[in-house]
Image (cartoon, rainbow, N blue to C red; front, side, top):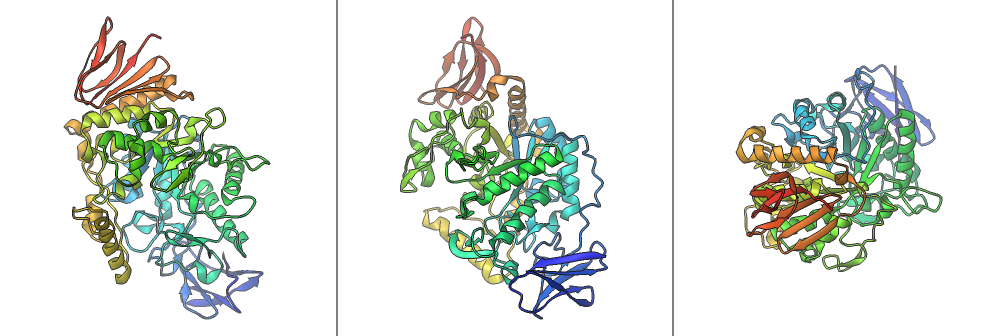
Length: 571
């Protein structure tokens, strides 16, 4: 027999379990309703509140027929795990690789992604970050409009395939992070509000009503998301979670939801005997997000946080783009500052926000590995009008120089899938909304948004299948010409990062910029990047080089235009 339970304080007098061709009454237990029934894995079921329409289980583990239909019974203990020797992967010393299951391979499934793990292991990354997999309507999407937080999107292979993927990653020596969305649910197939006060109008988010973390009934809402996190970490063996847009987790309680989540995660890590990681996407530029918890409430205790200022300064230096939020990073001092400290805005004026923003970081209290730095992410590529990657904007020499700056920095580097070989495929914004009105609104809204910003190019229709197909990686490029050369460069940089402690040292680098020439000193090593048209030179021995580099030993090393060298120097 299987026990079914649902929290439904908004139900009036009855809640029923609809399973197979039966409808069974459920017994009230406070605000919970319970029933037992014979149910094999795969059996479809739903709940009916006060005789109304069938609704999927808010804690459904599978929605094989879509989020509007019945849920399916899943046995999360059926998988035979082979990662008993996996000791975990801490964030300190890690390199992250962000991927989207649907476009990582032509097949777009977890099982197909397993076939590419040899590539990731050989590349030298240590943590794979999987973009959201919670079930959503349709087949195609980024995953941030999920409506069944406990269910794995069926098109990717469902829960069993997800477990196989994590297991295989561990056997390849790769940890796995899952991107989760706790600040909102998508607009279509979201029935939680019919069961209980999951949302509140007291706060607003860019996506509608906020999740109710501090209002009436919020104890169970918090528990819903805390237990969701526990499920991924315990039952799916994920090594951590990336938490989407935590600045939209509005919580006025004395103990913030994030602090409670961090405490519960630390307890689970002790129970499981392996490190567990929580990484915040945060717009606040506040190091307190990752400071340890204590009785004073000075820190939320998360493991790490994204530092987008690093991306922005690098992007402006490489491309010269200064529109929108890039405008502040046209400051000649921006690049040097973010290579020394993660927040350009650390209490400074932010013109695109129209206010001062951020707080300084003291590496003595908050080490640099707690900040995740990147050249490209799903957001920074996909939210461009045509999804053009950095490889579409600059030449291989600049890509190589930027990679050297990132992968020798004291931060935790993160790559976006395909970045390592300068993928020629775009990564665009794609959706598969099933309601015609919603689909039309998204398509027209996207075009209107970029037209308002003066974008004259044809903006791909998010609803078009071609937009999704065009975003899938072309793996044949990994052995082709400049793509293969760049891939070798990334692998070599990652090998140096593992072998030379200076490149992961917690001290702030010394950075010197003279026009288009950038020198970053890391212990006895110098990363010399020449973004200009004229040679740059300095003494030293060449450790690694890309482009036109000559000399060394008794002669100065000369780094030609659009080239980079890593040098060993004598202090």
